[in-house]
Image (cartoon, rainbow, N blue to C red; front, side, top):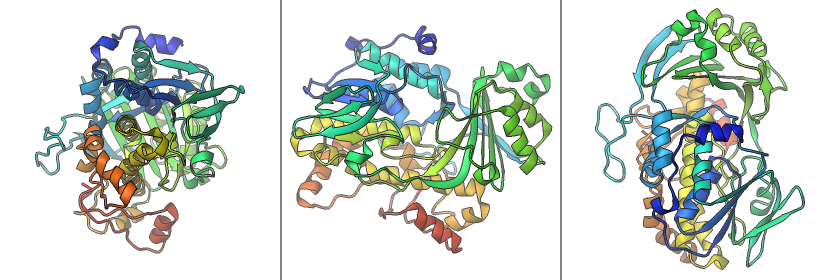
Length: 496
């Protein structure tokens, strides 16, 4: 708990009396997983009048992970509903100015600030608010600790050291069986325990098969003091006052990102797995040494300059993770047969880092789930959870597809050209349909229509996906086969 205590010691979390809470529903919710999606589900369930509690398999709050972006659809919600969390994001998060480089370090463009407006056009959110003027990059461990601190301040029970190994449900309740043999029950169970969740057996009848992308990421984040102690590195990777500086280096089959913000350095290298067989895993515990990474670069990309090797060597022991990038086909079903177990976040859908939406879609899941549970009424028919599933699946699937497009452009330039049928139609960028969305209002506005479509087959079309796009099922194999044939992927609508 030392890390958690260090992060939260100076924070003033909102008290129960400071957060407007909806009338109590009497619904008990067991949330499995204390990552961002699980903890935000707990906060939102509490706010909507439910009674949540959380169990987590790790023995204590973790300091593992690097960073992610919290973009507008989630950030606006946090600002309006969880002021203490937003204040910490605003204080500790940073705005990144990006420059683009050849793999030898030569700058091609930038640095430039990320903007949400398109071609100078002033764009508004779904609520008619102006486009935000910054993007917040935050440390994953700190953000998770902040969510945990707020949950505890509200009296939400969070128990560590409880690994769920099986999920079950009947007409009256749902629950999990833990590795220690204990049995936990509630009216509703939220599976937020990540890609290895055991809820797939109940929900899909089988584990979800992962498809290798042939790529992995060396990724890390640590104190920038280890870098600035080297005067040459401090000069080469400076910090911009009040903001972070990021560099993107690219060539075929290698993308390097270096980010330097006040007090923190992070870097990541997306590389082909075939060049180093057998070391990559989808795990925060899969560590490699700085020497290992430098050897990989020297053996495969000799044009990478020596000063980047020195930057890599500043990483502390066990700080670098070799995270395997795995594709998983979109899974249309996130709910159990009786509707009492629901998946959120990575349990329901994994997104590669190039999608730029992994954290945000988990938060949107949490917001939508708590709202649908509030509106759903009768738990016995399971329609509330199927409605949640219907409101969320197509949107997340589009985000997954966008991640594939972006990664193809970064690492396979010849594929990137094939992905885009019309450059004015589909661009690998962070489109309005993502950042302009209000997930809570969307759930309130569309719950009834989506619910009815499940009852009497009335047509319902989601509007939280790219404008003009009609959702079509897709698989990773279909996309790879199309690109390998030299054909272009065609996407209707405006993804920009």
